[in-house]
Length: 324
Image (cartoon, one colour):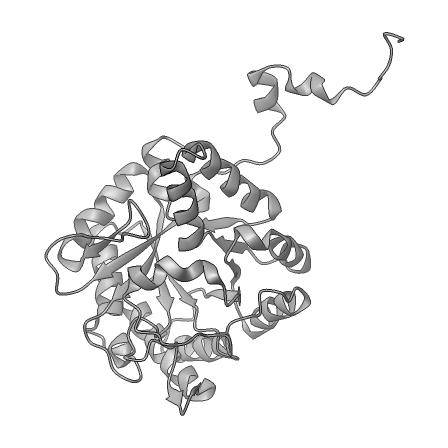
C-alpha cells in the first residue's frame, strides 16, 4: 500500500494530550454551571436524599453558611427550591413576603451578595396536592395560576432574587410574570423560562428531594417527550412573551431539542441535567459500571456541545471542588 494513502489523517490531531487539548472544540467552566439547591424550613440538620447520593436538603438555618461554602469553591450561581411545611391548595406561602421563597433569596444575597440567585417560580413544593398551580376539579386552572405566579415572582424579586425562573408550564406564564414584575418596579429583573419542559420520567428523585405530595402526573401541562416541533414552538412562544433566556429540561435525552432551539433563537439557552440523570450516573459509578468523573464531564460536555450556554447540574459542587 502506498505510504501516501490515506492523505487525510484525522488521528494527526489526536496524537498527544497537548494536541487533543489544543484542538478541543467544546469547553465548559464553572461560569457555565448553576447549582440547584433544596432548602427545608423548620429542621435542624441536613437531610440526605437517598435517591440522589451526595445531595442533601439544607436546613434554612444553615443556608447562609452553605452559600458561603459554595462561593469559596467557585460556584457563581444557585437555583433555590424550597421544601415547605406550610402547604395549602394554592401555594400561598410563595408570595408571602415572610415566606420561604422570599427568605431563601434574602438569606443567599445577604450571605454572598455577588452570588447570582435564581428563584424557581412554581407551586409544586408548596401545594397540598403537589400540582404546579390552582386546581379546578381534576385540572390545573391555567389563568388563575398565572396571577399567583406573578405574585410569587414579585415577592422573590423584592427579597433579592436576581433571576425569576418560572417552571410551572402554564400557558402565558412569562408574559404574566413580566407584567407583574414591571408593574412592581422590577423591569430590570430577567426571566429565565423553563420554556421547553417535558413530562419526563427522569424527575423521579426530585420528588423525594422536594417532598412532593403529587398524586398522578403533570402530562396535561408539561410537554410530551416525543414531540420535537412542539418543543421549539414552546420556547419561541416564551421568547415572544418576553423571556430573557430559554431552558430545556431534562437535558441529556433532549440534545436534539437543545440544538433545535439554539438554531431557532438568539437568546441564551440553558439546559437542566435533572435528578434522574444525576442518580443514574451516581448509582452506575457505585456499581462499578462507569467512571463517574469521566461520565460527568462527557455528559456535561455533550450538553454544551449541543448548544447550551448554561447547565443546571447537581454535579456543580463536585466539579468545583475537583478544580473542574
